[in-house]
Amino acid sequence: MKIKWLHVIRDVIIITICYFIGGYIVSYATEGYAEDVFVLIYSSALGSLGFCLSACFTPKDRWRYLRVVTIGVWLTVYFPFLIITPYLVTWLLSVLMILIMMFTGGALSFIFVKSPQKIDPIVDEIKNSPQ
Image (tube, rainbow, N blue to C red; front, side, top):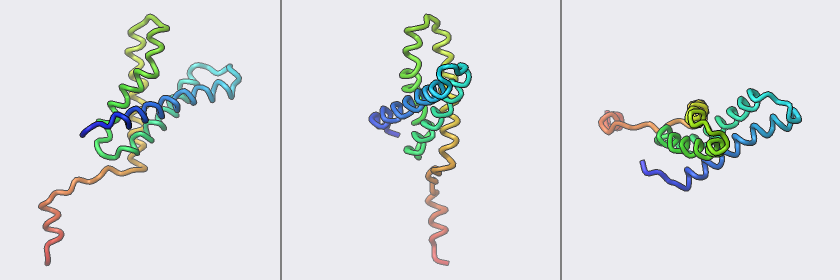
């Protein structure tokens, strides 16, 4: 599979915007008194929706493509935390949250867009042969 990098950049931007909008909505709705857990849950839910959209745009080799997008999202979303917090372990463990969003969104995408079926030429020839 050849990776189209413009599509990867598009999907990283979509997922990053969804992720940050989730936190913003919870913080705005509670006037800044939201617990960090609720912000994380809502951000993750909208991040999963972004991964679902990304996976729906790419029905072939969906999981391989989502892995590349996940690395881009991880670097985009959590790189500022590496600068702010000196804890490298926290930054490295943050990939688990992004992976959970990727698997959730990727699995949801199979509800909306089915994977293309690989057709065996021998079986196809038998089905199309005159009886």
